[in-house]
Image (cartoon, rainbow, N blue to C red):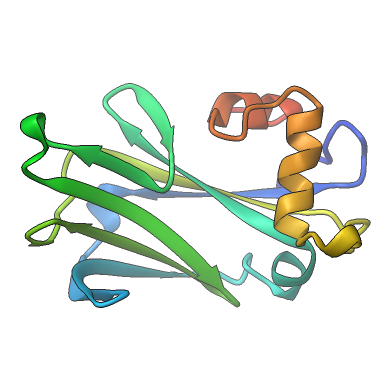
Length: 157
């Protein structure tokens, strides 16, 4: 578990997953053929579900990019998608493209930041996820930039 955030009310846990440790299975994502991988983790606890969010990133080359990741082949002939969702004790990665399942071999690592803030209650009809992202944004943090988020919470790379 990482150190407390700057304002002292957030807890952050990092889960790193190397691509070499993934064994993709064929399945579907919202009716499209897709590869998927289920990562079981007790870190995705009820507190994360009720009061937090999970931010996902992937390392492509030397750059960390936010998930979901969508890219298009030259000329637009094909699109590729890598995304995730989470539930209690589980993070599920999905990879698919226009023609079916995708093996995202160029991605070397995935990193998930589990952020919880028990003071966030979803006021004004907003979910905890939206409030946490709003808090970060209002602090000048780009949630799409892994390094900015980690710096905000005083975490090491």
